[in-house]
Image 1 (cartoon, rainbow, N blue to C red):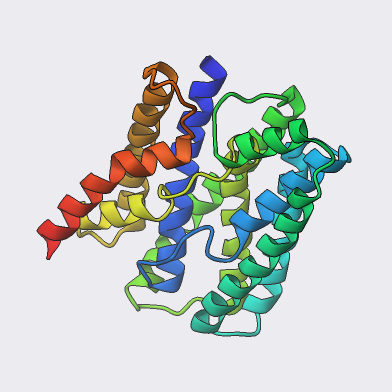
Image 2 (cartoon, one colour):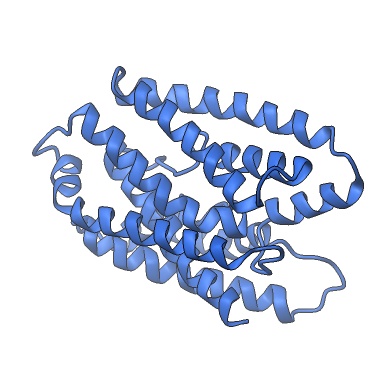
Length: 263
């Protein structure tokens, strides 16, 4: 129970903070940690690890996400932001297709179920080892430290006062990958929170200082995930409720109200 709550906290911080970093890097409210194929890469690595047993699900997810990030790192050195977004969408589709092939050829139904339960996002931490936890916490610490250290330059870049070089952007992507993978590799890809929550933060608070949005987004992310976790754990509807889908259902009315109010 305590370990599950720890990952509610880590996921609630890591994904929104990574999301707001992407929005500031791209100067675009559609910036999302999954836009460059990171979510698809995590699923491909987890699928390959689950179906073949070549490593733990957590390590498989991290390795594949790292490879995806390195590809995007090299592309970022050569193209502008708009082209990178287009590339990320196409690259994510390609990786997702590979993941579909791997899953479709699952050796048995039990492995397929194990993968899908992870992919639907949960905090049961089934099959997660002590080394997986330690590895994940190290990634989280590195990613969060990098986010805080780079906050001043990101804010000035977002405001148009400076222009970050492609090398800086590429290194930022690598740091964001560490932050996001610390949660996704353990709990599965959790949608909405990395895109919706940063946008909610920017509606609620008009300040441009990214450190303010780190705090607001993290508080919102942890709150939403905690409510969702409690609903999934204790609301007995007679069906299995995935974390990611349940949170989107809970949060969508709030998003609609705030966007309508904004307009």
